[in-house]
Image 1 (tube, one colour):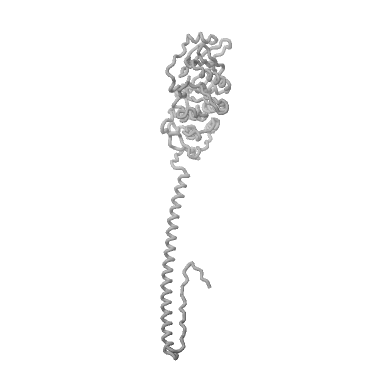
Image 2 (image 1 turned 135 degrees about the vertical axis):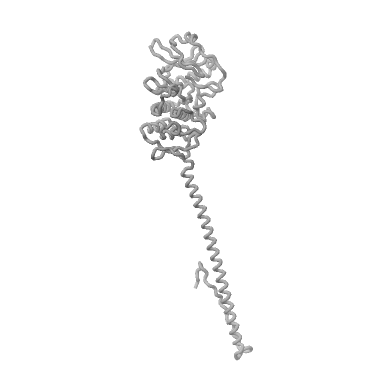
Length: 402
């Protein structure tokens, strides 16, 4: 019932029930109901109110750090203001004789892990549970609170089937002007690795509300398939015969890049409810794909999911490229053919012009010979030579000037 602590400052002693009875005389400790990396959770009775509650007691060693106690108190007060039907309420908070503690709403039921292990969870049940978790996260995120440890153990179901998120013990809160404060153990990385978003593992200080959406996507996938989405995982519809309309919703929550995920828990809730009433959710954004699956899921008109190894844009890009190359080659061929034809035409007309010029010169020479034999020939009147006009046939493409 507590968060996983990785890389902490070593093993610490846990509270002893007999000792706690003297530390908390105002409560009647009934039983231990959960234990985690930071403390234990007890079912207690408040005799004065006749109310059953849950008392979370943190490790005594944590209270030795004054900065931790200060953060714990400030954040506990902030969490106490989260009043939502899908969030476990915080009634009180304090530090007593070296113990930091939280008094919370007691949920008489089971957690989601227990339901999953019983084998009684169906896809229809998942559609009833996920919207409630989304609603809780949307509210908490709106208050500047990140959960950071969404997993089946922290999703509770009471006897009436109502959903409640528990254990905001590693929550991250906004504290004005963009600053954030975190309830953490110094030198530790909080969360449960199998459910943590990539940025939560790689850059713990650069985490926003979209990390919770990723974690809920892991939970959703596990609810549908019974497996964790590790490595190259298949679509839910390929494993347990799940409705293909689930695939796009799950894949979008599991995007490695948080910019490609649902940007709000409310957006995810809307699309889950669309599937719930039989509608087909919108396709994923272009270029999206499951983190680790290596595929893009797209819902067709018939509701079937098909893999698109090559996008339509890529296909059209290749078609245009091939067409461009064909046109370029064809254009080059035509240009070279026209140029060759023009060259041949010019050569032919030049030969004709030379032949005509030679014939004219021969005729004129013959005329001169005849003139020499006439009176006044050699020493008589000189006949000026007749200039030979240049004969230049028209070449295709040229304009004749008169």
